[in-house]
Length: 240
Ligand SMILES: Nc1ncnc2c1ncn2[C@@H]1O[C@H](COP(=O)(O)OP(=O)(O)OP(=O)(O)O)[C@@H](O)[C@H]1O
Ligand SMILES: [Mg+2]
Image (cartoon, rainbow, N blue to C red; front, side, top):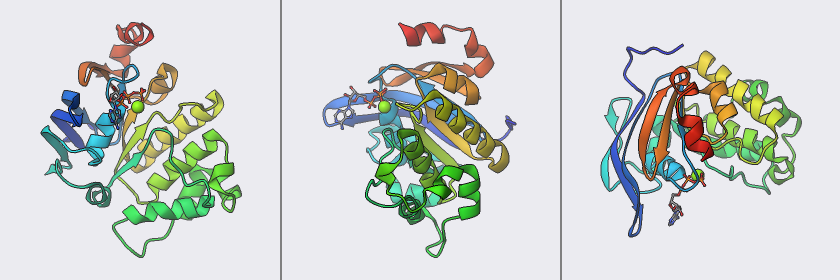
C-alpha cells in the first residue's frame, strides 16, 4: 500500500557525480516512496550503479542534494548513512566467501545503531530458510542465488528503512529470482521497508515495482507507475 500523501523517504535532486574527469551522473533526480519499491531501469553503463554508490556516499557528490527522511545527507560518509537506516546490496553481491553464512550475517551488524545488537535470527531465517540450513557453511560454497539471499539478509540485519538493491537477479535462476521478488514484496508490505531497486529484467521488475524510472546517460528520461509504464515505450527502450 502506497501512502501517497507522505513525504518520500529519499529525494535525490539534480545529482552529479564523476570518476575523476569522467562525469557519469548528469543531474539525476528521483524520489523513493515510503513502503514501496522504486525501480531504476536502463541499459548497461548508463550510471545505475554509480547512482546507488553516490546515494550511499561511496562516491562524492559534485552537485545536487540527497535528502533522507527530511534530513540533508548529501555529504555524509557511508557508515553514517548506514546508521541512519540506509543499507546497500551491491551488484555482484560481495559476500565474504571464506566466512560462514552466519559470520557474513554478523558483518551486517556493523551498520546497526545499537553496538550490542544481535542478528535477528527468527526474522532473517523465516524470510530466508536456506540460510538457517546453511548457517555453518562457507559463504563461497553457496549457489549464486543463495549468495544473493545472503547479501540481502546481511543488509537487513541492521534493520534499515531504505534498501538500495543493485541487480539482485543478475546471473541467478528465474525460480530463485521469483522467490527473491516475493521476499521483497513481503518486506515492503509487512515492515514498510522502502526499496530503491536497480533492475534490468523487466519480468522481475514488473513483479515488485510501484514506480519506475528510466535512466539514460546519467539522468532520468522517463518515469511512471507500474501500470503507466507497462504499455509505454519502456520495453522498446530496453530491448533496443
Ligand atoms: N570505478 C570506476 N572508474 C571509472 N569509471 C567507472 C567506474 N565504474 C564505472 N565506471 C564507468 O561509469 C559508467 C557507468 O557505470 P555504472 O556501473 O554506473 O553503470 P550501470 O548502469 O550500473 O551498468 P550495468 O548495467 O552494466 O551494471 C560506465 O561508463 C563505466 O564504465
Ligand atoms: Mg550496474
